[in-house]
Image 1 (tube, rainbow, N blue to C red):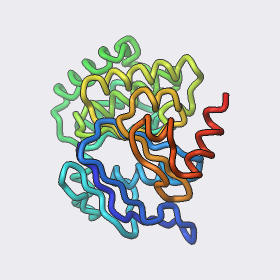
Image 2 (cartoon, helix red, strand yellow; image 1 turned 60 degrees about the vertical axis):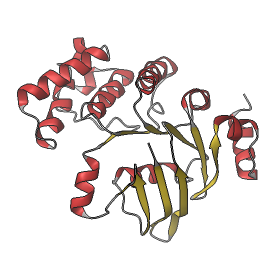
Image 3 (spheres, rainbow, N blue to C red; image 1 turned 180 degrees about the vertical axis):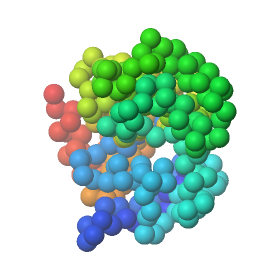
Length: 243
Protein backbone atom coordinates (compact mmCIF):
# COMPACT_ATOMS: atom_id res chain seq x y z
CA UNK A 1 0.00 0.00 0.00
CA UNK A 2 0.90 3.64 -0.35
CA UNK A 3 0.25 5.51 2.88
CA UNK A 4 0.35 9.21 3.67
CA UNK A 5 -0.57 10.80 6.99
CA UNK A 6 -0.37 14.58 6.94
CA UNK A 7 -0.40 16.75 10.07
CA UNK A 8 -3.02 14.74 11.97
CA UNK A 9 -4.13 16.34 15.22
CA UNK A 10 -6.54 14.90 17.77
CA UNK A 11 -7.60 16.09 21.23
CA UNK A 12 -9.64 14.46 23.96
CA UNK A 13 -10.74 17.44 25.98
CA UNK A 14 -7.64 19.45 26.79
CA UNK A 15 -5.35 16.50 26.22
CA UNK A 16 -3.44 16.41 22.92
CA UNK A 17 -3.46 12.76 21.83
CA UNK A 18 -2.03 13.24 18.34
CA UNK A 19 0.17 16.25 17.74
CA UNK A 20 0.62 17.14 14.08
CA UNK A 21 1.45 13.57 13.03
CA UNK A 22 2.88 13.08 9.55
CA UNK A 23 4.18 9.90 7.94
CA UNK A 24 4.63 8.83 4.34
CA UNK A 25 5.48 5.52 2.64
CA UNK A 26 5.42 4.95 -1.10
CA UNK A 27 5.33 1.17 -0.58
CA UNK A 28 4.72 -0.73 2.65
CA UNK A 29 3.03 -4.06 3.29
CA UNK A 30 3.28 -4.31 7.06
CA UNK A 31 3.61 -1.16 9.16
CA UNK A 32 3.96 -1.63 12.91
CA UNK A 33 3.34 1.07 15.51
CA UNK A 34 5.30 0.65 18.75
CA UNK A 35 5.96 2.95 21.67
CA UNK A 36 5.04 3.67 25.30
CA UNK A 37 1.49 3.10 26.52
CA UNK A 38 -0.67 6.18 26.16
CA UNK A 39 1.49 7.58 23.39
CA UNK A 40 -1.28 7.72 20.77
CA UNK A 41 -0.79 4.48 18.81
CA UNK A 42 -4.35 3.18 19.12
CA UNK A 43 -5.88 6.59 18.46
CA UNK A 44 -3.85 6.98 15.29
CA UNK A 45 -4.96 3.52 14.18
CA UNK A 46 -8.60 4.48 14.81
CA UNK A 47 -8.18 7.66 12.77
CA UNK A 48 -6.78 5.62 9.88
CA UNK A 49 -9.73 3.23 10.26
CA UNK A 50 -12.19 6.12 10.12
CA UNK A 51 -13.40 5.43 13.65
CA UNK A 52 -12.14 8.75 15.06
CA UNK A 53 -12.36 12.20 13.53
CA UNK A 54 -9.14 14.23 13.62
CA UNK A 55 -9.44 17.95 14.29
CA UNK A 56 -6.95 18.53 11.49
CA UNK A 57 -4.93 16.58 8.97
CA UNK A 58 -5.37 14.10 6.15
CA UNK A 59 -5.19 10.34 5.65
CA UNK A 60 -4.40 9.04 2.18
CA UNK A 61 -4.30 5.35 1.24
CA UNK A 62 -3.18 4.24 -2.22
CA UNK A 63 -3.59 7.78 -3.51
CA UNK A 64 -7.16 8.16 -2.19
CA UNK A 65 -7.87 10.67 0.57
CA UNK A 66 -10.21 9.60 3.35
CA UNK A 67 -13.18 11.97 3.45
CA UNK A 68 -14.03 12.58 7.10
CA UNK A 69 -17.73 13.01 6.39
CA UNK A 70 -20.55 10.62 7.22
CA UNK A 71 -20.84 9.28 3.66
CA UNK A 72 -17.08 9.28 3.10
CA UNK A 73 -16.39 7.32 6.26
CA UNK A 74 -19.09 4.75 5.53
CA UNK A 75 -17.44 4.11 2.18
CA UNK A 76 -13.96 3.97 3.73
CA UNK A 77 -14.92 1.62 6.57
CA UNK A 78 -16.33 -0.91 4.13
CA UNK A 79 -12.82 -1.37 2.71
CA UNK A 80 -10.96 -1.70 6.02
CA UNK A 81 -10.83 -4.68 8.36
CA UNK A 82 -10.27 -3.88 12.04
CA UNK A 83 -9.35 -6.24 14.88
CA UNK A 84 -9.51 -4.90 18.44
CA UNK A 85 -7.72 -6.09 21.57
CA UNK A 86 -11.06 -6.79 23.30
CA UNK A 87 -12.39 -8.89 20.39
CA UNK A 88 -15.63 -6.82 20.08
CA UNK A 89 -17.72 -9.85 19.19
CA UNK A 90 -21.50 -9.88 19.66
CA UNK A 91 -21.95 -12.03 22.80
CA UNK A 92 -25.45 -13.25 21.88
CA UNK A 93 -24.41 -14.50 18.42
CA UNK A 94 -22.51 -17.63 17.41
CA UNK A 95 -19.07 -17.45 15.81
CA UNK A 96 -20.71 -18.00 12.42
CA UNK A 97 -23.30 -15.28 12.99
CA UNK A 98 -20.64 -12.82 14.11
CA UNK A 99 -19.25 -13.07 10.58
CA UNK A 100 -22.46 -13.33 8.57
CA UNK A 101 -24.26 -10.43 10.25
CA UNK A 102 -21.92 -7.63 9.06
CA UNK A 103 -21.59 -9.27 5.64
CA UNK A 104 -25.36 -9.16 5.22
CA UNK A 105 -26.28 -5.93 6.97
CA UNK A 106 -23.29 -3.72 6.13
CA UNK A 107 -22.03 -5.13 2.84
CA UNK A 108 -25.29 -6.37 1.36
CA UNK A 109 -24.12 -9.94 0.79
CA UNK A 110 -27.00 -12.42 0.28
CA UNK A 111 -27.50 -14.71 3.34
CA UNK A 112 -26.50 -17.94 1.56
CA UNK A 113 -23.32 -16.37 0.18
CA UNK A 114 -22.49 -14.80 3.56
CA UNK A 115 -22.88 -18.19 5.24
CA UNK A 116 -20.66 -19.91 2.67
CA UNK A 117 -17.98 -17.22 3.05
CA UNK A 118 -18.09 -17.45 6.84
CA UNK A 119 -17.87 -21.24 6.85
CA UNK A 120 -14.90 -21.21 4.48
CA UNK A 121 -12.98 -18.71 6.59
CA UNK A 122 -13.77 -20.47 9.86
CA UNK A 123 -12.50 -23.73 8.35
CA UNK A 124 -9.36 -21.99 7.10
CA UNK A 125 -8.65 -20.68 10.62
CA UNK A 126 -9.42 -24.11 12.15
CA UNK A 127 -12.58 -22.86 13.79
CA UNK A 128 -15.20 -24.80 11.82
CA UNK A 129 -15.89 -27.10 14.80
CA UNK A 130 -16.71 -24.03 16.87
CA UNK A 131 -18.98 -22.23 14.41
CA UNK A 132 -22.11 -22.67 16.53
CA UNK A 133 -20.51 -21.59 19.80
CA UNK A 134 -21.04 -18.16 21.31
CA UNK A 135 -18.01 -16.10 22.38
CA UNK A 136 -18.34 -17.09 26.06
CA UNK A 137 -17.87 -20.72 25.02
CA UNK A 138 -14.60 -20.00 23.19
CA UNK A 139 -11.07 -19.51 24.47
CA UNK A 140 -9.45 -16.11 24.16
CA UNK A 141 -7.37 -17.24 21.21
CA UNK A 142 -10.44 -18.66 19.48
CA UNK A 143 -12.39 -15.43 20.06
CA UNK A 144 -9.59 -13.38 18.54
CA UNK A 145 -9.37 -15.71 15.55
CA UNK A 146 -13.13 -15.27 15.03
CA UNK A 147 -12.56 -11.50 15.13
CA UNK A 148 -9.83 -11.86 12.50
CA UNK A 149 -12.12 -14.08 10.42
CA UNK A 150 -14.81 -11.40 10.55
CA UNK A 151 -12.33 -8.71 9.54
CA UNK A 152 -10.97 -10.59 6.52
CA UNK A 153 -14.37 -11.87 5.37
CA UNK A 154 -15.00 -8.53 3.62
CA UNK A 155 -11.76 -8.93 1.62
CA UNK A 156 -10.35 -5.65 2.93
CA UNK A 157 -7.69 -3.66 1.13
CA UNK A 158 -6.06 -3.08 4.52
CA UNK A 159 -6.23 -4.86 7.89
CA UNK A 160 -5.72 -2.86 11.09
CA UNK A 161 -4.93 -4.68 14.32
CA UNK A 162 -4.88 -2.95 17.70
CA UNK A 163 -2.95 -4.97 20.29
CA UNK A 164 -4.60 -8.21 19.10
CA UNK A 165 -2.79 -10.36 21.69
CA UNK A 166 -2.78 -8.11 24.77
CA UNK A 167 -5.58 -10.06 26.50
CA UNK A 168 -4.15 -13.50 25.74
CA UNK A 169 -1.82 -15.91 27.50
CA UNK A 170 1.39 -17.01 25.70
CA UNK A 171 -0.11 -20.13 24.07
CA UNK A 172 -3.14 -18.23 22.75
CA UNK A 173 -0.88 -15.37 21.66
CA UNK A 174 1.10 -17.80 19.51
CA UNK A 175 -2.14 -19.04 17.89
CA UNK A 176 -3.17 -15.54 16.87
CA UNK A 177 0.29 -14.45 15.73
CA UNK A 178 0.54 -17.54 13.53
CA UNK A 179 -2.70 -16.54 11.79
CA UNK A 180 -1.48 -12.96 11.28
CA UNK A 181 1.84 -14.19 9.87
CA UNK A 182 0.01 -16.49 7.42
CA UNK A 183 -2.17 -13.64 6.18
CA UNK A 184 0.85 -11.36 5.82
CA UNK A 185 2.66 -14.03 3.80
CA UNK A 186 -0.36 -14.14 1.48
CA UNK A 187 0.10 -10.46 0.67
CA UNK A 188 -2.55 -8.76 2.80
CA UNK A 189 -1.47 -5.26 3.88
CA UNK A 190 -1.38 -4.55 7.62
CA UNK A 191 -1.01 -1.79 10.14
CA UNK A 192 -0.41 -3.33 13.55
CA UNK A 193 -0.15 -1.86 17.04
CA UNK A 194 1.70 -4.27 19.31
CA UNK A 195 3.90 -4.66 22.36
CA UNK A 196 5.18 -7.98 21.01
CA UNK A 197 8.61 -6.76 19.95
CA UNK A 198 9.78 -10.11 18.60
CA UNK A 199 6.73 -10.37 16.38
CA UNK A 200 7.10 -6.74 15.28
CA UNK A 201 10.66 -7.45 14.16
CA UNK A 202 9.56 -10.57 12.33
CA UNK A 203 6.66 -9.18 10.28
CA UNK A 204 7.28 -5.46 9.80
CA UNK A 205 8.51 -3.80 6.65
CA UNK A 206 8.48 -0.45 8.41
CA UNK A 207 8.23 0.56 12.06
CA UNK A 208 7.04 3.84 13.57
CA UNK A 209 7.74 4.72 17.19
CA UNK A 210 4.94 6.85 18.66
CA UNK A 211 5.36 8.72 21.94
CA UNK A 212 3.61 11.74 23.46
CA UNK A 213 1.30 11.98 20.46
CA UNK A 214 4.12 12.25 17.93
CA UNK A 215 6.03 9.94 15.61
CA UNK A 216 9.52 10.22 17.07
CA UNK A 217 11.09 7.77 14.65
CA UNK A 218 10.18 5.74 11.57
CA UNK A 219 12.13 3.43 9.33
CA UNK A 220 12.98 -0.18 8.59
CA UNK A 221 13.18 -2.79 11.31
CA UNK A 222 16.96 -2.69 11.31
CA UNK A 223 17.07 1.10 11.43
CA UNK A 224 14.66 1.42 14.33
CA UNK A 225 15.67 -1.59 16.44
CA UNK A 226 19.43 -1.65 15.84
CA UNK A 227 20.23 2.03 15.41
CA UNK A 228 17.47 4.24 16.81
CA UNK A 229 18.12 7.93 16.36
CA UNK A 230 15.76 9.60 18.83
CA UNK A 231 16.35 9.47 22.58
CA UNK A 232 12.71 8.48 23.18
CA UNK A 233 13.14 5.49 20.88
CA UNK A 234 16.35 4.46 22.60
CA UNK A 235 14.78 4.76 26.06
CA UNK A 236 11.68 2.80 25.06
CA UNK A 237 13.58 -0.01 23.33
CA UNK A 238 16.07 -0.26 26.19
CA UNK A 239 13.17 -0.99 28.54
CA UNK A 240 11.18 -3.43 26.40
CA UNK A 241 14.21 -5.35 25.13
CA UNK A 242 15.98 -5.56 28.50
CA UNK A 243 14.75 -9.09 29.34
